[in-house]
Image (tube, rainbow, N blue to C red):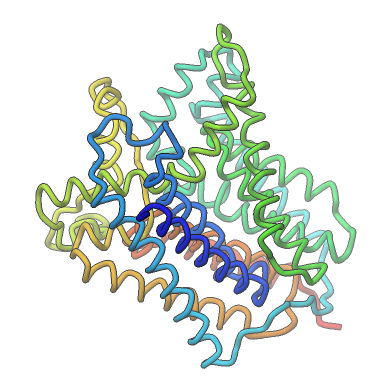
Length: 428
């Protein structure tokens, strides 16, 4: 009976969210965060309770009190967040349903110059690095490539703080979104769009990480929806998830060891498991760890160069170590992020969860209210809004405290302002 009630409440919450998606811009942070959080946290928590995914929590004696706690905070907290964001946006009266393009005159030569510069940096970075994909291309073993991925995550992970990655991933993601928006409007520089997209995919897949490339393709789809003035709905979201899962399965054919056969259904289930419950599973281990020790009282907050009087506790790495003791004994290191509020619970308990939810509400309202305050925007504005939306939608599966020291967004803002000055000639 309790499981059926859990399923029913989850369904009602998702139906409410799908109705809200019809009312907001497809490229808004609010829309993208709702889609990601619905999949990562809400559906993920439900799948753990109903034991729909046999891949998860197989190595522990399951404490259903923790599972229902995760579901309650993820689902009921999400419902409160959606209602509060909707009320505040109506209060501010700044939300517009569909953005449209304004007329701008661009310098094609400046666009080509900046595009080639980014591609060149990406090419140099890839050739000089020992990223896992380069190991494979040089004839290395698949297992060696995956070991390299887990032993060098600080250098080549998705959206990590690395000098080259500012351009090859952060800035290039924004730039590709701009180029796609620009192409939809002008039908010009198709070859540059293709070149930068290819460079972006190579940059992401260099770490054998499928997520970045799939996010870029999803961004293109959302920009197209905005271009034809369509909003998200349940059918579009479900269709998009299906396409993303299929596209994520295909590269597995290249990465499986030569002595194994490619089983499409097997890898489809694995990718679907990773998307739906893989992001919420670490929450169970974190809560169980905290309940058996003590709260961290803010030690997960970033402490760059140890400028603050506390020792930083890397919760994401600790979670991976708890979940992967065998790999840890091999000297490997990785990170297992989970939904934003888990970090709040680890630091301050229920009070931290409430505060973190309110901070995310503020982020959703303020960013959309500021960037979507105009009914007409330029193509480069669309690209920047799309980057911002994807950047902060990662809160659906990443600790909030990691955004307190956010060099990535600072670099992209600087590049956006400089490039906007360079490529826009005049208004028509």
